[in-house]
Amino acid sequence: MISAYIYISILAALLIIFFILSAVLIILIRRRPGKNIEASIKTIIPIVSPLLDNAFFWVNLDGFISFANDHALKILKIDSKEIEKTNLASIFASNEDVNKILLMESDRPLKLQTNLISRDKEIIPTQLNAVLIKALNNPIGYILIADDIHLREIMNARLEMEKCKKSADDHSRIHHEYSEKINKLNTIIQKIFSAPQNDLINIIKEFSGELHNLFESYMTTCWILEDGNEKLKLIAQYGLSEKGIEKFEKDFPTSNKIIQSLDRKEVTLNDISLMQNSLRVLLTQEGVSNIAEVPFFRKDAPCGVLEFYLKNKSDSEVTKQLLNHISVLLTTICSIFYIKISNDNEVKRLHEEKTATEKRLMEKVESCSLELEELRQLQKLTIGRELKILELKKKISELEDAMPDGRQATQE
Image 1 (cartoon, one colour):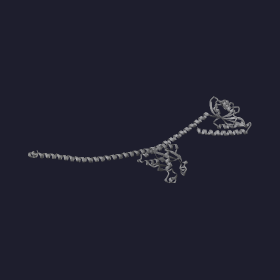
Image 2 (cartoon, helix red, strand yellow):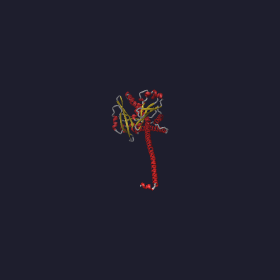
Image 3 (cartoon, one colour):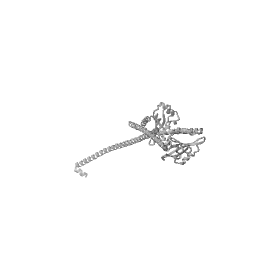
């Protein structure tokens, strides 16, 4: 089955052929006056008309049809033997349109949107082109080409369906490619986070290396904005050798250029054809089409940029979606580590505060223990003194009891 695209192309080509042949016909008619004119017309028209998949008529000056091609007979449902008895007025719904044709004076085409009527009274919306044919400046007849609007709408609908199908196929392909790469990306994430290391820089280095392989990038660079520094530092590079980098070092984006992507805060795909240096020649030869810049952040603060030199086979829509996904992912990773570092610092602060408090308490306990020991020693001394005093009082009492009564009396 011929597709709508091919059909439309063939139809356009045939229309061009028809108008060329019509021009040839007019020239021949003008150069061959006399009785041979009608014979020439009847010879040429049957040759030309089958080339068009439209209703094609040759109409005499009196309005009667002298020739109609198979397509015209089919849509009007008229037998070929009856066509010469058919007048334009019987196949047009509007006498006004008939008069417009029969009263033509210029040989410039007349375009009408009208309605034809078939033998069984079916109304056929039609786009009509009429040309007045002259010989030696004398009108001799009309050529009519009627385009069935319903058929054209059907073909347009088919064309639209094919466009929709192609679009659906493209979306399906893009979705499949995107899903495939997302699955690979998830595998990469699991691999990286299952590794026994907690350093953010090392994680980003390893992640950028895996992404370099995922995109099959010509080259990948990873830039990090160090704390307290306004310039980016190149921490990882994959793809192009150091020797190659040295050769084109002056043309590669510097940290000052890369930092502009952080200001934009969005993924960008830069066409290398717009580059104005020798690197463009190298990248073009290697099949590189775009340079993708993927900024990432932590708590809205710039953190770094991944840069991919992508080859021609990369689908721009899939790539852009995936790069946006990666930007969000890297931002999330950096934010998690920022929170982790903040939590670690808070834990460290609390631990130091706890240690200092415990030290102060131990010093206080030690001081209290010394004071308690001194009190215990003083208590022991005090108790000893009290015992000694009681002992002395007892002794005094015994001595007093042992003294003679006279002495006691004297004393009294």
